[in-house]
Length: 283
Image (cartoon, rainbow, N blue to C red):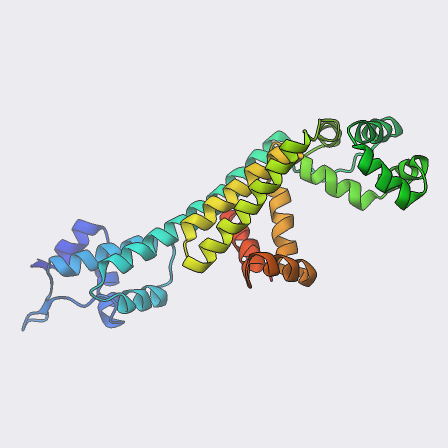
């Protein structure tokens, strides 16, 4: 048995705080002597270490009390809760680190740089160059001829909001143009990318069904990697956060995705992306 003073010296928790924990029934001493001295045994110290851990994660005392009560005599459950909270903290740091990295690289600047006519024509010519005969046929059927298609694309680049959004995703006008001029790959590669996305969505569905947070976070990371490969970008954080917003707010997208991968999976993916980057769900 250790006295309240000894426990205070051992853990760094003040005597006043230990007394307060006793008063609110968060940590009761193992024994109180006739003279009124609080004594703590090994079980009490173990519980105190758990409380200290939660406090380091800035969990409110009321929540700690509820967690401890709910997990009474179940050390595994407490450890699983602690693991989950550490993962949440790690994910939040992931988002902060990537955000700082973007800022240091100048990738999150909000200044608008317009695409000039040369940039636009390069992108249009490249898209036509890699386009299949079937795709060109569809374009002609839709627009009437190739020239009208080129005019429509060029007009789209004059939309400041759309261009600013594109620049934000890629980090700069130069990187957006560079990505647009890169080959989109062969039909086989495109098919592989589609299959990969399908597998990722199925991974999310499995994670949702089994409540597996670790699997969910791995799926987000895999989705980011796939988007970087598909859209030729250095960092997919901005794009994924945009996707998360769509997943949480677009009913048509939700209906289509849920139909294919299971009810609730669309919002689950959006929330998972927010959790990964430590962003509050503003749904």
